[in-house]
Length: 497
Image (tube, rainbow, N blue to C red; front, side, top):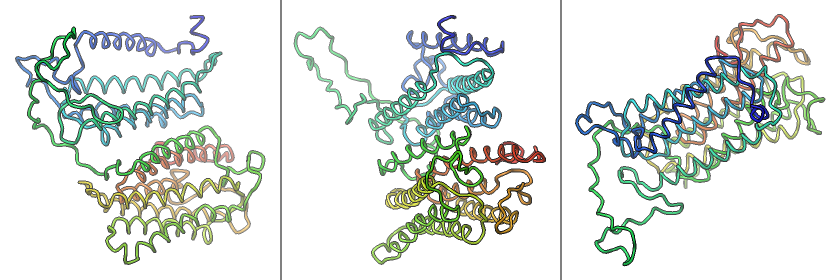
């Protein structure tokens, strides 16, 4: 224990956690030995490896896609819910929760958009895997939660662990992507994976082995079984995300960047604007009045949307899809409304660092240009089977209206020139601190539903994480500044968080 105590926390004061650590280690060891001995968990190419020849139909089977969703979704929900059930400012527990949630989000993403399945999965196997992942996620987070008050290990492995996690998740995703390329949709055969192109087929000819080879000649492969008549594939709700490698890479980079920003907000390292701007903490040497800085944030994105819509109205683009015009128009309205609020609604009292304003401006320009471009790339692709445009439009208008309404309520708290902050009242401010952020999340999700392409979906999810972090920090700020702040008022989700 002397060596282990140099880089591990002492065991937490929980009999349950300590017992589950021993049980989990034993169970995983036995599962590994079973795989070596040929007793496999029944999924992927081994889905019928252990079936009894007498009664194979007695086992309940799922299509592999449904089975894998059942395996990963509960663990993802447990990781996401942990931000509400175990709120903490501790950097280590925040990183662990973010890593686990991102891990299972990536797995669900692969199930829906990457993997091509040809076999089934035994229901009992899906339940075992699901239970194992969910239990492991909960216990890891709970163990870290219990370890918060314990002395830190002398050797800090956190940064090395983050680097290893990123290398592992990116490498795992890359090789899953390579595996998916070895099979076309509808194919049921297995091929040898290859880094650049599918492996050439085997030549099963009598006498094909070179003379003198010690290996025995392999018999011809058995004929492929007919395609199964199981449940039909899940209906699609996104355009194919592989039409543009650039957008696929940009979506991944955007997700990681916003995850870092969201984690920073939870840890108290805020973007320097609004109530979190301070000349003492700001690293910016140049500061702008908030009104000018916000115009710098929004005007370039508004200009991009305006130019794009103008070009789409030219005769040469008459064949563009209605979805492109819709997306372009919604983005234009969004940034017009933001500029309108900056000029006529908001009352500012602080400043904003120039570098932060430029960073936000670039983010919005990138969002606007990439969303429009992803829609243009997708217009010749097959439409998703589930059309989310109507739901998306409803969410967009609910979001933009609710956001504007609560911005007006905030503005009424102050008279012109007043620099004092007050506890917001009215509307949903009675139950949450940041209803304007909640409605902005709804608006961005509605925009993503109208688009039904990968990039705006990723941006909507990532911006939601950032706004949750910002709301969490905002509530803590109000609690620290106002002794009479009502404790029942949550950060962004009424009665929950």
